[in-house]
Amino acid sequence: DLLFTIKDTIKAFSSLKSESDDLASSLEGYRTQITRLATEKAVAIANSNRFENAIARLQGQNQCLSTEVNASKFEINGLNSKIKDATMKFNTLESKHKKCSCELKRVTEE
Image (cartoon, rainbow, N blue to C red; front, top):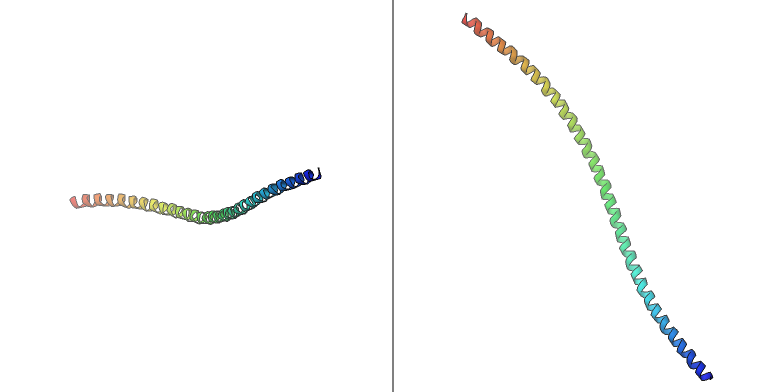
């Protein structure tokens, strides 16, 4: 009877040892997976930071370009105003020139 109990104990121990080895193997697999995932996470964080920096840099460039566009628009408006003034002066002078030409023609014909 004692021999049977010892055999059962050895059998149970052997079964527990096998289960323990299987669990240790599984744990090692999970440890490897966790390490790999942690590395992937670190790469993803680095990429995210790089993209955020690029976005900030582009936003700064966009702000500079917007300022330049606004300055150009202001300059265009000023030039449009000068063109309008010059056109009005030209039209006035052209009208005076036509009157003078007509007057000159009339005088020379008399």
